[in-house]
Image (cartoon, helix red, strand yellow):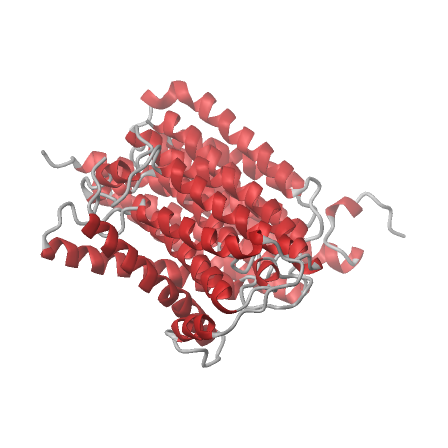
Length: 223
Length: 314
């Protein structure tokens, strides 16, 4: 038996981590506790960090280490901490009823995942890493959008945006061997961090003036 | 089919002796994690011995089913255990359809458990039985699909073949489809063994219990068989999860060295799984009964996606 090439190993590991990200995404969809949601997001981001780390290690791409480190600091530690603090400050940890109940949204997301598998199928030849990472990345984006409009609380919508961003990062990693150019990634990264901080303040303001984070109440006039 | 009496005897002994220990370990760790001292890990053995010595109280209106059920529950779990590779890659028994037979045997045990709960005619028994059947109807498809995910990769539903096929290089184990199937099967494990998000093994609160409700009328030897059967089933499912998805270190032959490594590997895998169960039990609250289908729905969708992914990632 001849040993596996590093490329094979890295492809296997990357797809494995990507599948793990999808698992966490699906768990996010059914989990209603806000704090657990945040932790699940942190775990998902950690898998993204591992993917970046694996690419950096197996393909000797030093600058990808930087991406991995930034993801680790930003998305695994800082943003979850920030959101966590905000949830505690607002003092509600329970999500109210989402628009669709859990089994229905699970089925829908299963369908979305299947759809993205099928759509990504012709592009498998384009990918240099992982077998069908693009499919998973697309399903992360789609289910992230679904998560965004299925939840009513502003803070879970922020979380959904972050998972969409995770999907985009994964797609970038899957399609280009060494990730996007560093400048672009840095740009996206700081964009997201700033966006979340702004949204965080916004959520706080919404709650202050409407006494609720329910975005479906925002269409009511306030005297 | 070749039957090896020695292998069967050894695995039977291992199953019977290890099952209460795993239950005791989980109970002990759970207590530790909740800042309680908890029962000693060999407490289940003492319980079983005590139950076996006690007289039985049999309800007046119970039929023969009441006395028959404990034996079926116990033996079906034991038989299912014999069909799973524990220490050696070749399971001592391999009957018709491998994993299908295991699932079928577990279903048979559950059927008789529910009948036993109904037979005594108490309200709680019937309630427990109906809940158990509801949950198992949801958990079983997820379990089948999750195991089929592995079976399709191997091309056989025979558990020994699955384990042997998994004994390639270590990096092959990081199979993306297996990741999803593993999570699905873990959720099924929680549901099937009556762990906290679904059922509380420590409760006798009438409105919430499921498994305990069915055992309420049992006492003495029958109760011992029921309890032992339940912990056997737990061990069988945990071994299935550990050895099918992570067939590291399982002895390919019966040399003492290989068996020793295999025993250590099995112990390590069971310890890790038990720790995971304890973590889940401690960090989660019990779900309302009507929310349980949501959890099992997740397991089902994950298993389905895993199965579909085998074609897309292949």
